[in-house]
Image 1: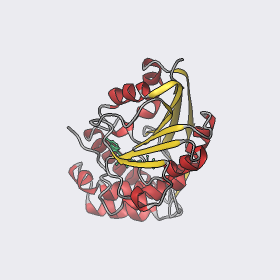
Image 2: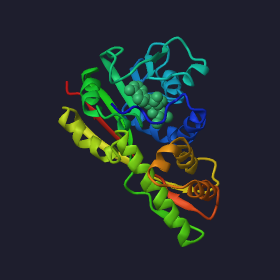
Image 3: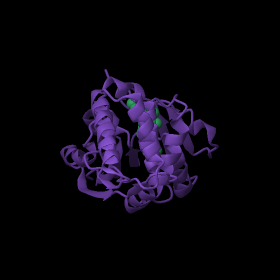
Image 4: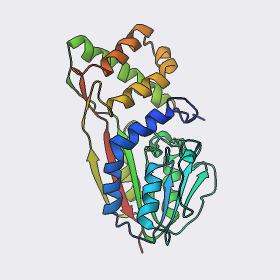
Length: 264
Ligand SMILES: C[S@@+](CC[C@H](N)C(=O)[O-])C[C@H]1O[C@@H](n2cnc3c(N)ncnc32)[C@H](O)[C@@H]1O
């Protein structure tokens, strides 16, 4: 069975988590607020990574509420201090029994996209909601990453080559590259009501503090897989340089936030 590709034990993981936090936490917070988040809610944050959203949920629900943050490797989230009503669990959402039920809100960002068993996981998450509880899934659709500006045509071709090798490598590891847009139908089929989706994308600028750094850490961490797809070390070096070049701008992956309600 394929394993999660971007193992959290890798030294680049803190960079990935801080890039995800700075690129997407504001987007996710808006989505979570629009689900009706209120003091006293019981929330499950699946695959919580660095833990920033779980901690924010804890502040918003307050001590009358409860937040459970899970991850197969929670070592980075463990480094943050948190109040008693925010619980961090080493937990595999595919294999382990769910940590609870009757949740008001279940949120998972960039987790199900990686899991070949995503449809079974989706059904289990729905069953762990209280009637009227909300599920919010946020995942990439990786099919649309146009280059918006480049120093020359060779740079555009290099990005396309490395990106297509990365996508091939991710697919072999069980990633659904367009799960972000497939989630809507899957959530309707899983019995959720009032399903709606919002998509976020932004320009990622070479040398910028956030965004494009995700391409760089993904390619660095998957470099062996990319070599197996035929990408040379010289191309990888040129890709890293391109990601630091302010003349290069690419559209981010589309983050699709899809939420629905368990029927009463
Ligand atoms: C791309 S990261 C996203 C982290 C965080 N949700 C965010 O958006 O910042 C995916 C996270 O899912 C976790 N993960 C992968 N497979 C998992 C599983 N089977 N059960 C629980 N967590 C898992 C990984 O360890 C990693 O922390």
